[in-house]
Length: 466
Image 1 (cartoon, rainbow, N blue to C red):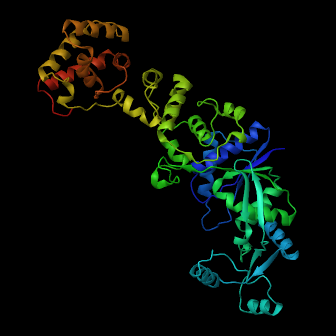
Image 2 (image 1 turned 90 degrees about the vertical axis):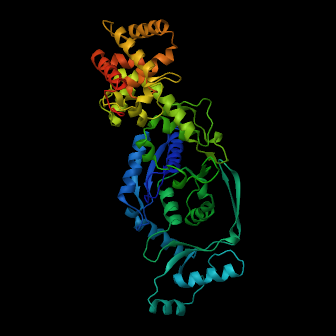
Image 3 (image 1 turned 45 degrees about the vertical axis):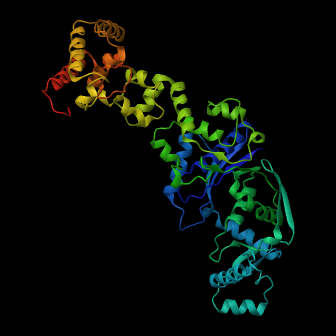
């Protein structure tokens, strides 16, 4: 059976890169009727937090990426890692290292001065019993290091093809710290084996870790999973995605009013090119293939995400979007309002810009009421005439539009010039949702009241700001 896993370290918020990795694992599992396992690699006790765990869990739930097993936590499995470290010690593939942090730093410093790559020299590889007793008497607490053979290693990556590493450049690495906590390499290898992980789909930044983990798998007699290292996500300027260049946390995009459907859809396009761009999660599952993933870095364009989010807003329709908008924090917005704005918005946080005038006292200046090339007197004449036309009209958008067209012809005005002072008087802005639909929603009484107040302002009866 296909078994994949997401194994984040809960040391910070749910990052877009982790979300993309989660999605590709999820799609691969579901496409192949496999299992998707969630595991927290929380052995960094100083940085791992429950708040980060919850942020990851909440982000996965919001995106609709439900897991089949877990969440497992490495801190709850410590005896397992210690047991396998002891096994490696017994068969001679690992050894105790008594080097202090100071000694290791001095060694790295000497190597750098000589122009050599800084790596562990293996000074504790063959300690005598007497030397070990001396270190123990000094109170030194040993780590456990894995012996790296002086050879090369190649493996086939499902995205990058055959990858080759020269292990002569690697030093023996720590697999168990002096406090009994496993390092990343040991814990991940043990967990992947015991959880029967068949495919490891993760970021390209882990590619250099893979040779060490394959060596551990061989030493412990574990089967080797298949690897697929995803390309990194870059900013448009080709720099690695980071908070300094913009939002990188899933929760930030949720707060800005992006839909989970759009986020999932866009994340899927970062490193993969399906036959069409707007796809639901179920459609992505059906079409997904590891073979189609690209090697080159994926570029994150916010404008593309905005476009896709707008496409999903329109795909979901008025009724569903009204529910989403109300749940997002705008319970007063109704279907009639959504009907006239949902073609215009790209994110849910744009809703107030288009709808606030329905609920709040509007604010505008005298100059905003005056069409370009006209005068305050001209604006006053337009509003007075339009107000007169509204008397007794059926309060429906088509009837209101017909009255406006007739008035524009009568006053020898372009329709857009006629509507400038009317629009500002009613909405407070020169840009608004469709005007006659907005008037229908505002109602006859409120619309007439607002136009009358604008006339009063033009007649000098109001302040500069209303």
